[in-house]
Amino acid sequence: MSENKSDLLAGEYVLGTLDAEERARFAAQLNHDPALQQQVEAWERRLEGLEGDAKPVEPPARLWDKIEAALDAAVAPVTLRAGQGGWQPILEGVEKKVLHRDPEAGVESYLLRLAPGARLPAHEHHLTEECIMLEGEAWIGELRLAAGDFHLAPAGSAHPETHSDTGALAYIRGQVYDLAV
Image (cartoon, rainbow, N blue to C red; front, side, top):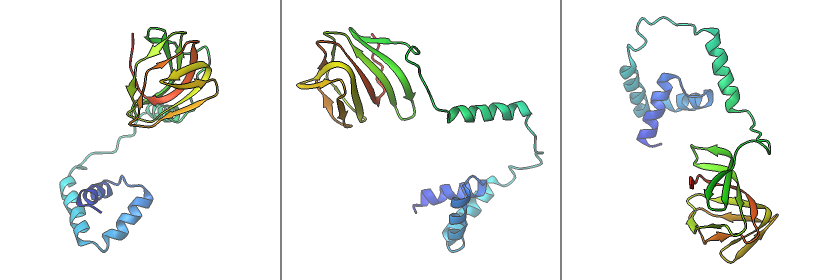
């Protein structure tokens, strides 16, 4: 274990933020590791006196209700009906309907609609992108994709220009692109 990681774990041990399994593993190692014992003692000295004479305060019940509701919402399934959400024009003849966005990961799921004759410029993929053609056909360079086809562009790959002569609808999961018209 690196010194930085062991120091971080020592701080979390003293603060009591390790889960039960991590705490048990750390405590077992602590019994036999003098350097780790010194790190724990250093954290105890740093944090000494912070508890002071503070009296515990019971938060109002409505606050607990809000916290529980926020936690429930964070793990709730997401359903977006066909008529919900809006199409955003991103280029001439190209529209995007965001289904889900994970800003922390920089990833989104969306529908991409290409009008007949629409074109997307060549671009690089910094994250892996998955595409399922739902309707119509599109060309990625010389590669023709039709309804039902799956295409994966790995992170680091380059996409040649994409176009559709007939129009197309695709489901895409990949990096967040904000290409508004």
